[in-house]
Length: 262
Image (cartoon, rainbow, N blue to C red):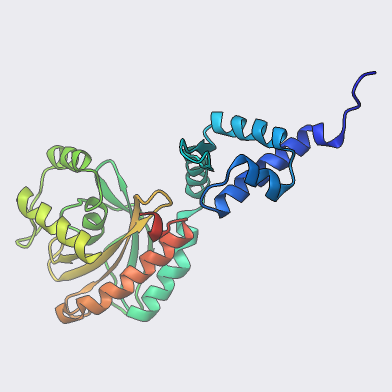
């Protein structure tokens, strides 16, 4: 007599079980076949089949010792793609507005593109003094705070290629034009978590910026506050830097970044 097909054999049941396995392994630091079978009440043979299938696809990886299954890199890759599809500007805009309200300075969000920092969002400070910046403006990395915040976390080979291709043009008498000095500056950025532009791109203008990280722990963007040297006095830089770092941290979290993974 032919075997009657049960609900357990249906494709939808297999999909539901596979998703349940991924969710269960994500919540724990690894699970064995037996633990998954017991927790999800799936027959051990069915769990074994699904686990092997997920492992082949890269969604799970199995430890040699102990046989525990953990999430694979494929899951991380998919989550990164999903998060990348979020409108970065939509995520950042309310945080930038709050940053401007608190600081009374102009806020920018910049990304790296073809070796330059490009503004993709701007929120003006209140008052009559307006910064000569706009969405779409391109700037060199070495002479701007948003650029330094992006450059500081690039792989050494990528940064070297950018510097060789674009050089270190002198924008003002304050601009860093020596590579060794710039590398020391970027090390300082990594150490303190923020970058400063001390009239290096425009005389009379000071900027402070911090990096925004994505779910892979890579720099996705940078957040900066800009003002005249009267608006943003040198002595207030540490306080402003904390505001910028907090804003960058909030955006990073909403884009899926967790400091525990870095």
